[in-house]
Length: 268
Length: 117
Image (cartoon, rainbow over all chains, first blue to last red; front, top):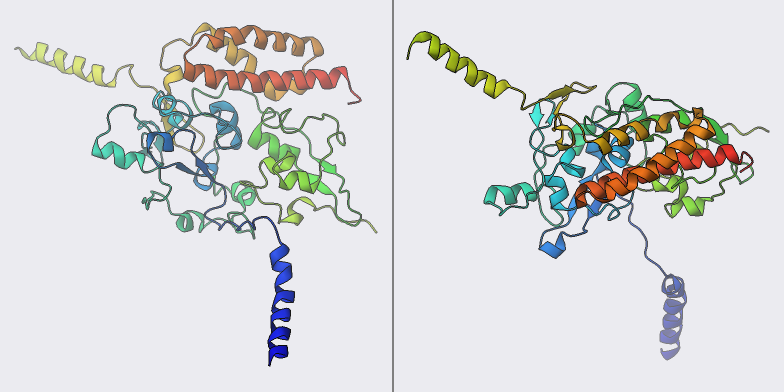
């Protein structure tokens, strides 16, 4: 009997060793409506407010990345911009549109942030953005908004590129008062060589990225090298948020969708 | 009050409500927007006009000569101290934008000067 107990215990320990030796935290894959969600907390909890939840999916259908991240001035990482309520109330950052006057589909977009003494109605309005841990009704439902859009496997589950091609979304390329009149000059597409033999080369659409991002969003902060092939980065770099990973880890289609980039047929 | 005077008062009131206080712009997809605070003043400030002139040409950067790019970088450097004097909000917004715009011009200039890199 003692021998049986000993053998059972030894077997349990043997099979539990692999799980005990694992380190790190497994990341949960975000659900389609969660993908692209950014939580902002520069000052919120300091002033006893819930952190802000920003959903990319509703905004990317309205504007190109360039409008927000170049013209309006939002940083590429949460916390980098240093947004304050006073900035928004003055009509900058979120206040560029969330000012109670700018219209979207004929309706005024709610005004965000107030630095004056808050009424009950003001507080309810604050909760629309300062919503971490709260159940706040939204004007837009993810399922309803994305229902007519072509689907893809990962990220938001929406093929944003195709949605734009089909005219289902029409992201604005300029915002009055923020975008200087800038002639749109698109760059040419080119291929990038995959380092792994047998892996298809990447067809990089410089043209599409120029239209969505402009030039200054990527150069030189994200991509330093000018000549093709002079910037060296690996999939590890990308998965850690560098180079292509600045966008293609959190907001644009994720890295799991290999074929979206590694699309050039492999030559025998 | 006679009819004529009454009519004048009504017209003046209507003009007052619909007058120059509000400017509407129509964007590409039909959404309308009012001008944000940056352009509600009738004329943009001198530094804003210079900023628009410098940073409105980023998309054409690859077509500029080295002299043009060097000049744009110098103009960015000359504009920065003026923006530093602004209030905190505008200083933060416009310095960030100027940094991106200057960075791009310097980057393209460097690529033209060192074509092997």
